[in-house]
Length: 142
Image (cartoon, rainbow, N blue to C red; front, top):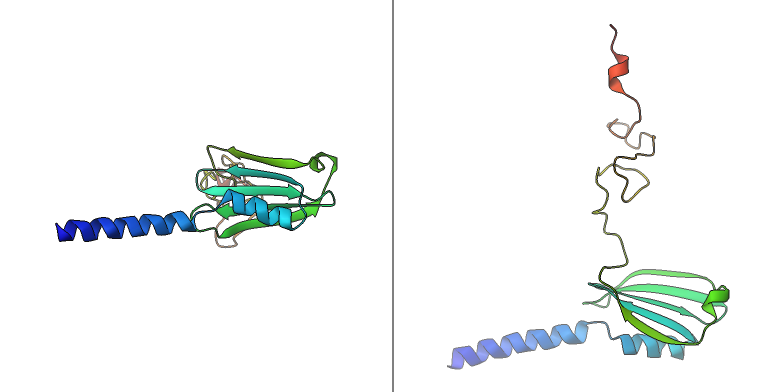
């Protein structure tokens, strides 16, 4: 009985710790508002949270790891006319916001994430000609 209680307590402690490590969208909104952002959009994905905000002059986009809270990506740019609305919107998405590279079907060093063997035509590795657009069968003498 005591072993079961200890095991249950350990699992509960781990799950509570993980819950506190998760990104809190209300805290993100409060932080952005405290920094003068008036147009805020939060999207919660499968494993990432994306925050977009504008203060009318600048726009910020931050992508967090939903479990750890680590910032995975952050961009700032000038705001445009569509960024001048005031309010907070929180929504859910099925997927995530950063491409992890798994969509690159030929795994070559080229410019496209989902390129379907559509290489950029440049030899990006001097030891490997696999992403050249040249056809080696034309080099044979008949």
